[in-house]
Length: 252
Length: 335
Image 1: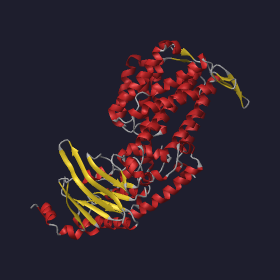
Image 2 (image 1 turned 120 degrees about the vertical axis):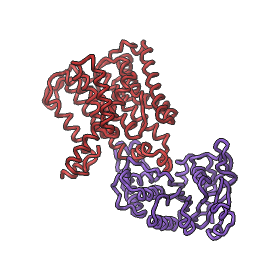
Image 3 (image 1 turned 60 degrees about the horizontal axis):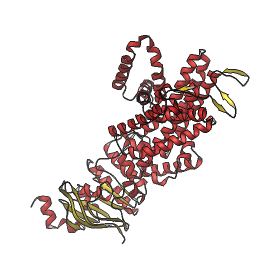
Image 4 (image 1 turned 120 degrees about the horizontal axis):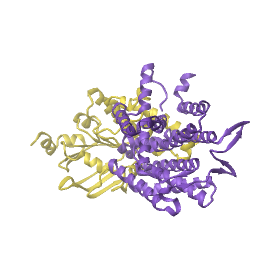
């Protein structure tokens, strides 16, 4: 198995606060890899470090063997990384379909001239982009919202739409930040099914999630962090029986 | 058939074309044509500015600077250096585009008030240079501009032209030229908006974080749209210079920048028809208020305030929504 993401000696300080301290782990290609931990453990900070929204104070992050420390999110997207957000980032000034089409931004070859005059090459690319985006909306279960304004959609549908947009980039690795937050039981079950389907297509999935049932059921490996440090790493079975983890969660 | 028209993305351009070309049949007074031509020129300018402000969600409080640069470059090049006007106009657009790219790259990293301040400063600097380089520009006294000409064929408001067997006086010919320019400006803008480039621009407005995540190089796109809107302003500035035949530094000044941005906001951001309506209203209003000269600014301010409070989306989108609700229809032009 090839290593998709490799993190070594990762540190992030905000002022005097150590949000992440000496974190080391690696994610293999095709895995569903979850990061769990109590509130404020540094899970979202870790995601922001990996996806280029924060720059690490120290440490090394490699994606497919290439160092990506200090790289902008758009450069990372070019290398096959895409993500969703705990605070959803949807363009409310566009329709649902346009949001997904935006996800294919890097797949479309266009320039100022073809755009200004709507040359046939552009129209072909746009048509293909539209078709693929429609497929993805069906895939995540947003098929009924094709021409709906994003601002008119429900919370649960927007969560799935954000995943469709991320998938539109044909990512190698997809990072989902709390995808089940705010969803009811049925919606969470649908989400679990969706994440499995994504992983089956060979996309590596990294997950930050609070819903233990979801995480334990779906993950190949888990990383538990607390106060920015690694508490444990292993399969769901190993994590469930780890005394440190039990102590951290139940208060020991 | 009518439904297909309602769904056509360019439907409003056809409506606009009809309005633009029917109006001359209803007017005779050359003064009205002068005013109408000015409106068309300024409308094309704000259609460009709208790409930056309405679609990409960035602001420029110095856009009159680019307009003034285009005007003065054309004026100096054609009048002092005797360049052909079309060449002067294109070189002006290229120079202004280059300058906009050089200043835009660093300042578009700023957001909100800071970006406003930076663009304000850019506008001020350009206005000050135009004011002070009086050997070249005539300074505060302004300068005379040679009429527009192409391959020896001169377009002057005082000329008389025959086209299709009709005698067309210069002021009407100018009006028609400006009308065609506005339509071209709108078509190009709409094409850009409907392209992947336009989608990227709108995503910067909607969520810059989302844009970056899917791979949009936001810094590059912001500079690009800044340059595009500056080039729009420059070309229309050149056109204006040739049209009026006399320009002063006021067209590059702060007041004028504010007028441009107000047209965009008042008429309706992210709506080409809206900003054109904004241009019409803001150009016509002073004419109607001429009788209350002492109170003109106060009335003007009041209208602005009332619009922002009761129609925050601008005249045009508000009116269109009202009409659509009345008809009980969800379809219609998206302009």
